[in-house]
Structures are given as structure tokens and as C-alpha cells.
Image (cartoon, rainbow, N blue to C red; front, side, top):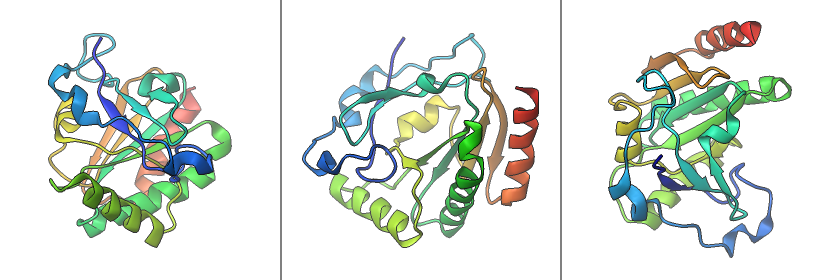
Amino acid sequence: MCFIALMCLSGLGCGSSNESAEHKPIDYKANVSQLKTYDRLGSATFVTNFVWWDSTGAQRQLHDYFGSPLVVTFWRTTVPSSVTELRDAAMLQQKYKDRGVIFLGIPLEEKAPRQEMFDHVTSAIAANAISMQQIVGSNELASAFGGIDILPTVLIISPNDKIVATFQGTQSAATIETQLQAILLKH
């Protein structure tokens, strides 16, 4: 099993430690050459696992959340509808926080120096008061999910790790919520 190491943006819902600025996370690009798609049950409909380090330095992986519904939003700061979609996801996160639903944002920024990329994402999140966990993505990660060609893209993942819905382009919060409620009724 191969993992992608990613960085979680400090202070953005990845951990609550104020020491996050002192911790230097591992750069995901160090492990990209080892990328292989991991499909839990050999099917493209199952989620690719990957690893990141949160703002406290603790290692996390997507499969740590196995058993919980996941809403994963791929987005970019320069796409206004992406930011709107992320705000909707953050609103849904507040609504479903007591139901065990996990929300992750994965910004896929255009190639830029690392600090510039972090600054763009951090500014967008702060300006929109978004508190959901953000994991800095890469083209390799997008490819591991079958390719993310349209931003925003939202994946709804069932508690048994299966992608049950993919929404490309702008969707209403109600559309995503309807799919999420269907999953919660089944589990």
C-alpha cells in the first residue's frame, strides 16, 4: 500500500495547538514519485488512501475515518464557485458535526512557490471564515481519484469507503445534503 504525504494548513481545523507555526510539516512532494492508486477492494469506486500531517505534527490518513461518512471538496482559490462550494460545505459541517460526518477541503492550487500557494489558501479560508480541515493537494492526488478535471468537485464517501456521489461544478448545498442524508439513513 502506498500513501501520499500531504500537509495540513496550520490553524485551519487540522488541530488546535498554537504550536503549529513552530512545527514544520513534511512536504508531500517528497513522496509523489511513489504514488500508486490504492483501491481498497480493487474497484475504482473505492477511495484512494493518503497520508498527511496535521498542525500538531500527528500523522493522519483518510482511512482513519473509515466508518464515518466523508464529504471531500476539491477546490481552487482562483475559482469563485469553488470558494462558494467550500462555504456551503463548511455550513453543512456545522449542521452535521454531531452526526459523525467528516468534511475535508483539498485545494488544488496552480503551480506556484509553496509559500505563495499557502498564502492564497490561507487568505481565502480566513476571508470566508471557513473552519473545516484543509489538506494541501496535488495533481498526483487528483489523478489518484480518477482525475479531478472540474473545480469544484465534491465526493460523498460512504462509511464503508465507497464513493457514492461525485458532483462536478457548482452544486447547491441542498443537492449535497440530500445525498448525505441518504447515506446517513442507510448507516
